[in-house]
Amino acid sequence: MQLTVLGCYGPYPPAGGACSGYLVQENRFNLLIDCGNGVMSRLQNHLEFWQLDAVILSHLHADHYSDTMIMRYGLEIAFSQGLRSKPLPLYAPPEPVSEFERLPYKNAYAVSSLTEGGEWQIGPFTIKTMAGIHAVPSLAFCIQSPSGTLVYSGDTEYCESFAEFASGADIFLCEANYQEADIRNGLPNHLSSAQAAQIAAAAGVKKLLLTHHHPERDPATSLTEAVKHFPGAELASEGAIYYVPTSHS
Ligand SMILES: [Zn+2]
Image 1 (spheres, helix red, strand yellow):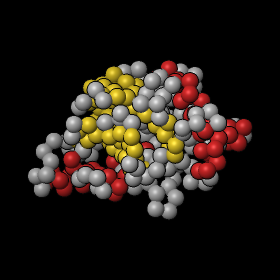
Image 2 (tube, helix red, strand yellow):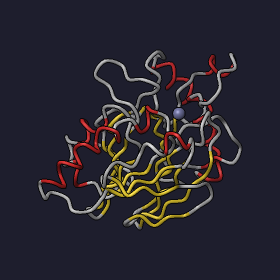
Image 3 (tube, protein in one colour):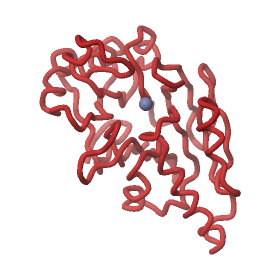
């Protein structure tokens, strides 16, 4: 399994950055997790967008799905040019309904609902879901293949059950939008890097990748606060590729 970080910022990117998007590949199957602004552009550094086999969205906030609104134009053109013959399977939580209903566009996507506590077989991946705590319904994904397990947090506040869900993951890709001061100040909806690291330690994951970086937070502080709890914690960086079993380029 190969994980490529396409975009790792939210709720907006810094200059030259992109919001949430992660390409997961195995046996030539190309799965895109989240599709925030800037992701379609970055994706094409690695493969043609029309070569995607499926897209799964953790939740329907714009920093996680806005480029699906752009990719649909490209898919329409790819169909007309004979580059692609079938709609792109797109899985997303069905709420907020107003956002979910915006996803279908001509025959660009074959849209399906993702719900908490379910299990889906998508290409070589078995994907389980868990609900996070967020302003809109947000799902965490446990993505298993014969080569190992990747767990992605989606967007969430701290919740006890996360450690069990992430238990034993080869890579735990966890949002760390906040720092400890933000939690002390009562900011809702996201984890601090320290909380992400505490979950990773409790779960016994092999590798912790902190992501969903806030453009107004110092990344060095986020990392310092995380390594107190999980010494091997790393900051996800755009363009980096990680492998399961684990190595990094
Ligand atoms: Zn969100």
